[in-house]
Amino acid sequence: LSNPSGHGKVSQRDLAYGVIRRSILLGHTKRGTRINERVLAEKLGISRVPVREALLCLHGEGLISKSKRGLEVTKLSPQDTMHQLEFRAIIECAAARLAAERITETEVARLQEIIAHQVILDRAQDWDAFHESDLIFHQTILKATNNPFIIRMSGSLALGPVFGGGSHAGVVDGHREIAEALASADADRAETLMYDHITSGPFYEDDAGDGAALPPDEK
Image 1: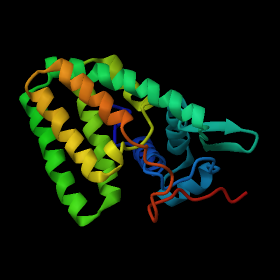
Image 2: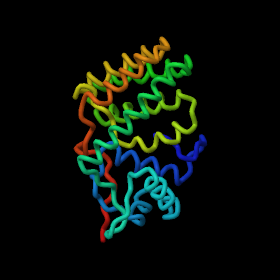
Image 3: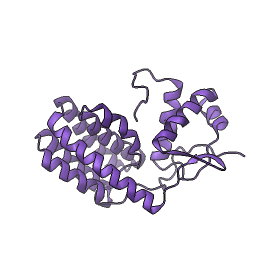
């Protein structure tokens, strides 16, 4: 998960940001769940100020919304989901094209490491770790564009992991093909493969199972 401060040292705000964001993106906390700042702070063992700052960041990304009930995990209608899908396809396909022209050997090696790890996670059926690795794979490509605007915008691509072809094996195959296109600097193929990967299967919904959900609002 990205560190909004951009620094190596993790602050209390960054800790809260990462925990909350991960719980939402991986589906452990349902859409529409009310967020209680005090309860979250108690669970994390920190003061309410960094939690409040983290929630502000997540509100800016569209993951948290304000309603008459207070703060809650943003609800998405089918139309909202389609609009986000269209936005993500535009950004990530363009990012794949740029990354093919700018990616470093170190970044290619990092993608290959992620793919190898995903093969192991798939065999072990460790879906929680698998889904998180999918997010990391896509973030790595966005960072490989070396474009600070795209990197900052990546927080808005908060749709959760992608199921290429509707299966975990499909995700691995899609990632492997994309990584090969990037390594060979084939911008056209990288862009096409990314589009197919994002649009070929359903997104990971709010049914991740027994993950670390955020504590509900006690009010």
